Amino acid sequence: MSILELFEIKHPIFLAPMAGVSTPTLAAEVSNQGALGSLGLGANTPESAKAQILKTQELTDLPFQVNFFCHQPEPLNAEIAKQWIEYLQPEFAKFDATSPTQLNCIYPSFLENDDFLNVVLETKPKAVSFHFGIPHPHQIQALKQAGIITMVSATNLIEAQQIEAAGIDIIIAQGIEAGGHRGIFNQHVDAAIKTSDLVQLLTQHCTCPVVAAGGIMNGDQAKTMFKLGASAVQLGTAFVQCKSSSANAAYRKALFSQKITQISASLSGRPARGLLGTWHTQIDSPHRPTVPAYPYSYDLAKQLMGIANQHDDFSYGSFWAGSNVAQIRELEAADLVNQLIVEITTR
Ligand SMILES: Cc1cc2nc3c(=O)[nH]c(=O)nc-3n(C[C@H](O)[C@H](O)[C@H](O)COP(=O)(O)O)c2cc1C
Image 1 (cartoon, protein in one colour):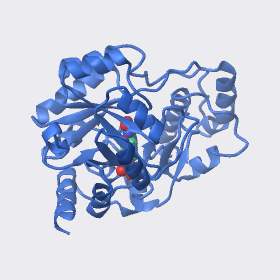
Image 2: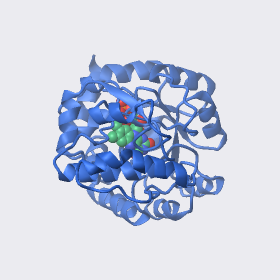
Image 3: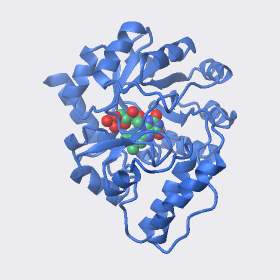
Image 4: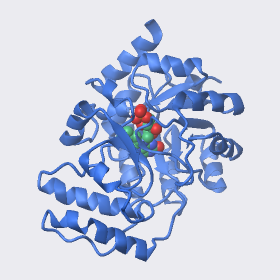
């Protein structure tokens, strides 16, 4: 069965799930053009995840995917947390604020319990995808029994082989160009393979369909991925600028003015590619203390960003973007999908 038949979509174009940027409107706009819309729900509670899925189902009858984080829950090292909070205290002091005394696990993993699984089983989206790892066997089995397509991000061949062995339906090949968090299973092991190489590697060695993600901004780049064996392409950065995303004004402005991206683990505790700003440069000092585990350090980074934003200082934002951000175009989601279709089919 082709990927179009499997998903019941017209075009092999996926909107990347983007926690903090996805909205039901954006997802529905993409799905309504015959591509696959998505919701990044990794930063949600089960209740708010359910509300977003139901809202999207109100806006479209067509298929879309939902996405969760499958990171191995890590305990917080109290000493590392204390040193990190002290390290960032001068930044809080710039806004006459004091840093918090403790860090919280702001993003629970799908692996921790079945609360997110139950939301998916209840609301039955067409597909569910996972970042940072693979769900438990009983969770995969339940999703399969419910007829929900499963997808997991891989950044190298071993991850892809583990995904396939777990019985997942589709592999998302996330290359090093990709905006946002690296989907690496172990945050300290990253082969940093570029998207075109990863697609070739995975299509040669795996039998599951492979979806290319990372640095795809136009139809020509998508066509290259199809020629290398990708069954579909997944674009994130290209859609962040759409009016229906929840990106704030500072993020939108930065997407069109800052052309350089870098990968840093200092903001969230896991490596992620974002626009290079002064804060990113500063926080990645070789003399910084050890960063607390994901997502505890993200808690602190987000609190600092929130306080700075209240003072109209947006330089502490984590503006995730892929390495081809300079090719971004200002287009509504429906127009962007249609433009991609024209570029893929006619040139
Ligand atoms: C703002 C932003 C947020 C992202 N959040 C998620 C997420 O919640 N879950 C996920 O699986 N991938 C996430 N990603 C990664 C995308 O799924 C995808 O790998 C990436 O956008 C592809 O590269 P591109 O941005 O160059 O198109 C995010 C990417 C961006 C740009």
